[in-house]
Image 1 (tube, rainbow, N blue to C red):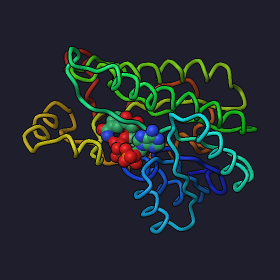
Image 2: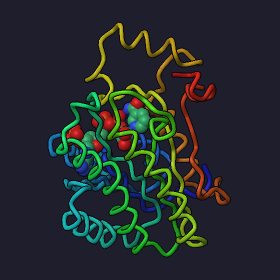
Image 3: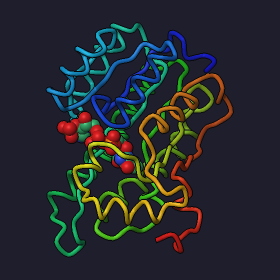
Length: 246
Ligand code: NDP
């Protein structure tokens, strides 16, 4: 991938799942990588496995923690070129049982966190790219995920507006994966549910996190200089049939 060597990148939620796959891919491409993640144990494990990276334990929903983390990282790396705004949470709940507490926490992490990190990054970038993590859940209705779907729809729209305001110096792109097999998903699945979900996906399987990481690396590189404001769907065809896919 052209133009990633030496780039200074932050990956939020990079201690595991898709974020970790992106960290590994960006390192392979020669980038210098810092991770912001709230999971202290996972951060320690990551730091041991990949001593060349910088890890900071912080909550993306906490403005003060983030400000400190971005300042420290930008100082150590002498600037910032790439933000992968990836940290997110989801938990299923029927709408009538969805608590205000869960609604607010999902919004705080999945939408406010993206806003706060994008602002902190853009203020420190002379030129760069911000890649926001959306989801096909932000494009299609999906029962039992009202909070998550609404937050991800917000991320997709936020991306368009930021792309307009931050151009031409900073490109802002959203990626919307379908089902990806990560700890977040595995925690929720039974074998039957996995088989039922795979049957709904035209490519008949979940994505591997490395496949999402490859898209992130491409978008962050000099191979994608004319891509901004877009939402790139990577879902094995799940949403190709629109509502008929559900
Ligand atoms: P994982 O749960 O596997 O990993 C997410 C990482 O982010 C964890 O280390 C988690 O820590 C951390 N994190 C969660 N909340 C915060 C926070 N407030 N501040 C800092 N770090 C935090 O998730 P995935 O890799 O599956 O998902 C990553 C992103 O991709 C999410 O935004 C998700 O919505 C999105 N996505 C995932 C899909 C999938 O199928 N997996 C499909 C479409 C989108 P902890 O362990 O403490 O929670």
